[in-house]
Length: 477
Image (cartoon, rainbow, N blue to C red):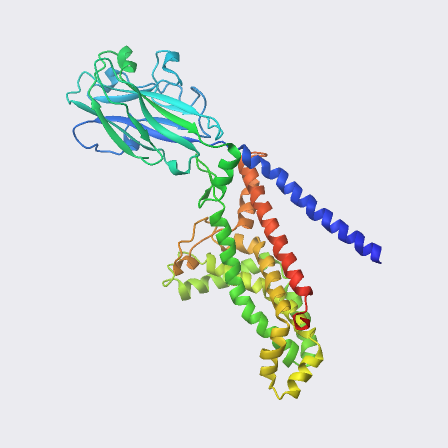
């Protein structure tokens, strides 16, 4: 028997280590991530404020490095040349054009509107060149060079140092060096003296600017740093893989569940152990333990059809609920899920207390409530803590209830009471939702396994701590 137990223990340990190793190996693809950037630049009227944002300027140029781009010209950019002077006539007096090279010496003479490339690792740098000029119709004395980030791109999240630099001023124009840190100045403008291109061939001889992305760290640390940020949206052109909103969503749902299950579970366990008759205990204890076998998808649909509408009816206005699928509803059903676990473990802990403790309390003249509150509960403290921890571990890895009831929106809580009435998303349901739609062995795939690894380690640690407390006997120390 001892050998069988030892073999089973070894098998369990090997299985846990093997699962952890597998998750770690699949997580490595997260560190193959590429980091992009994107800015729109435009040459606009110099003496008056622009009527439209840069992104709305039809002649603005996009300088981007992201998942949708390509080195050089592909189907998206094919034929999108910079506007000719004839095309600009009567439409706009200023324009920009990209050179599609890193070095002006390699320029082939054809200007394109955009420079759209594949993104690169954090350890690789990129330079994009664009020129700005005015047409012969332009009469003002200055040109405004304006820029702003591409949609969904946040320069503060980039691992590169992003700089807008004047490479060359046109012949006859003298300017001080221009260098703008785009991480601290993501949107802005500068004025330069007007320079007019008299022919299409002269357009590239105007103001020549470089958008430079300089590496500041390697891919491992850049990926790890981005992982501990506050935004998760892997489908954007500039993907975000921030763990924190998912982790907080998971923890808040679990804590709401514990806030409901712990008082109810502790009270029920005390009643079953110390107050209920043996016959009642024999009937109710198996029923409570059977509740733990109810499929979580059933609890999820029960919450969706009954609890969610009730939450909207009761708390909808106060918590600004747009839907019954939110943090509070998911937390309530999570409490229902872990309630049998807490009751069962806590009741076992109280029942395991030796009868001399009860007899001693009675000999001192304590009432039943005093015996429970002053003797049994302190003596069974470690067992009760173990019950809470095992309930916590059960809740933190639950997928179906969170998937069905959380609302599926990875938002960062703002520290307001109304947050509990808003949609959220946790780690388990994110893995379940997105794993079927990712490319195999790509960064998104790797980040989902990295989430799984963190959840796995978290759950193992909580379970081990719970079992450790469950084995202790506080009353003997």
